[in-house]
Length: 213
Image (cartoon, rainbow, N blue to C red):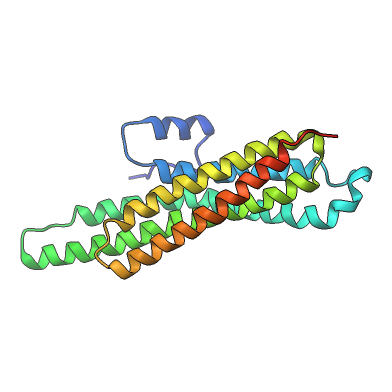
């Protein structure tokens, strides 16, 4: 029996068809990760259309490490899109465990909670990456070729979308946790990332949409 291809193995058309199909995965968590990866790619594009050009030599030392970090985050988020699908599958497997006896019911509840923790770590990581991408896009918008800053602006919007989309899952999962201390930690992390990440995305968008002198 062969498994379905993951987000990294599908063509764009196949991935969109899979999201649109009548199954819960890939779903919002995977899509949020892909949105973040797209945000990173736009930042990389602006950087790559700036680096190596004589008139922008003064910003190379700032822009090159930002570009390289965006590349790493793009890779991580592409992998996270796959991890999100797998985490959801693991949770559904826990839900499907037998529950005909008290012992089985107890084991099922434990398995569900453990799977829920794992399924929350993935979107939390996506949110962290999206917030960092938003901050890097500030750098790209400031230092990048001003004639293509609109692409950095779109990147900022996508980073914001990825952040909010991932945090929807973090908060939804936290609401189902029996461990209130752990749930509270996840919610605190979500609030922190939302505040900082959205501020960065807004600044990047503002910088990128300023009129070119």
